[in-house]
Length: 58
Image (tube, rainbow, N blue to C red; front, side, top):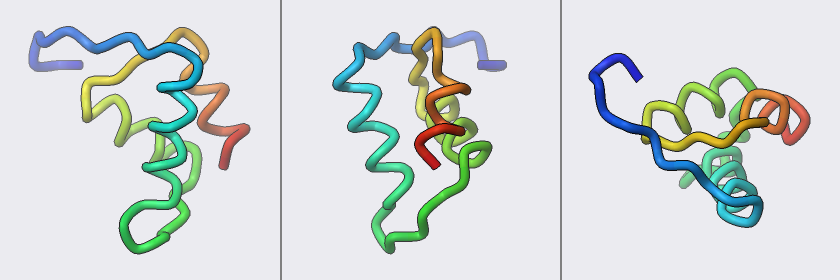
């Protein structure tokens, strides 16, 4: 994050739920892996395998 704030590290279940929320979205837009990664980072979330998980999930 470029604004100097700290990211919140998510556990396995929290990470899955966050990806599910972003992927389906309010209007079921089904975001791709790179967009999911960007949105999750923008919301201040992080986990070590974040990029890999987002691309596999999408």
